[in-house]
Length: 227
Image 1 (spheres, rainbow, N blue to C red):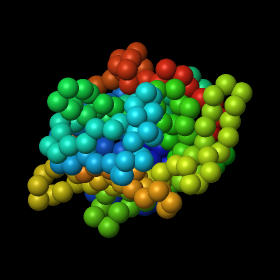
Image 2 (cartoon, rainbow, N blue to C red; image 1 turned 45 degrees about the horizontal axis):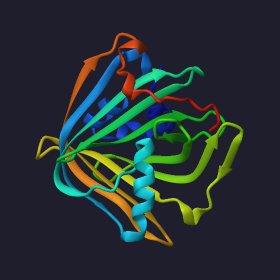
Image 3 (cartoon, rainbow, N blue to C red; image 1 turned 60 degrees about the vertical axis):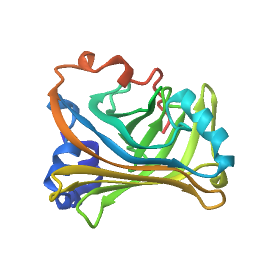
């Protein structure tokens, strides 16, 4: 079985830096998790009117209002099959501010119907976003988010474009620094920049013998079948 990223990218996956291929080439059969640890050089957010969105986002581990420089963080990645049998990757980012740990939780699948990556944001998979993936000029992997949808029980709707941010995320390996690097910017054409950060980290790998070995806080509290 190939990872969801390799399935989506096809032959372009081989154009990624070997370190990035190793990191994003893991699937549930490999029984391996990647753990990144490093420093966010800068975490920022947009103007004051963005703050209510950031405060709401922290309730479901999506966004948060804190900013700062030289913030320790970790990035955990676990590949598994969810309760619907879909190949899934859980991406858990933790940011250690002086008094609080903030999180951004994300689970990704490859939609059979959309033929796109779909990212479920937060603890309950209420928010689903279509994601395009490509090879960056620096050999990194680049994600760009598109349409955003909300699901809760029988309720489901598409957000109008002016209400959500479009993300541009790049993760690459710097051969000179011998480090992984990440850059994130979320913005909206009407409201401007929402949120972003850039950082540097190292990656290690650990054995995961079964789904039960994945930390409970790395799994969503609710899984959503709708994509």
